[in-house]
Length: 94
Image (cartoon, rainbow, N blue to C red; front, side, top):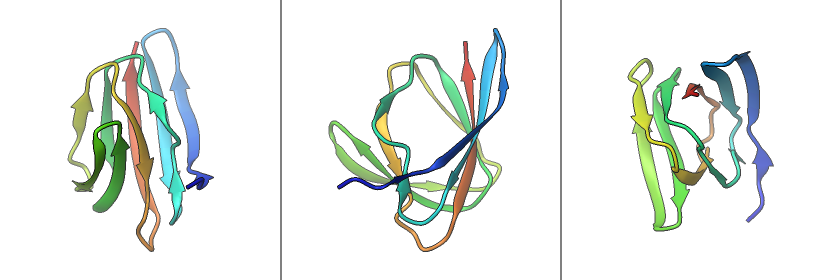
C-alpha cells in the first residue's frame, strides 16, 4: 500500500551530523529506507508508530523526550496509523 510521505525538514546538515524533524500526519510514512549511519531519535510526542521491517510489522510505543538509538544498516518503513500527528527529531551521526 502506497501512502503519502511524512514531512522531513532538515535543520542541520554538516560534516558531523544531520538533524531532521519528521512530521507524520495521520496515514503518512517515511517510505522504505536504510540508515547509512548510526542515529538517535528524540520523540516530541507520546504515542505509537507502526514499523515495517523485512521480518514483519511491529508497533513502537514512544514517549516524548525519551530518546533511543539504532545502528547503521537499519532498514524499515515508519508509518503513522493513528488519528493524530506524530513528530520526532532524528540525529544521524556521520
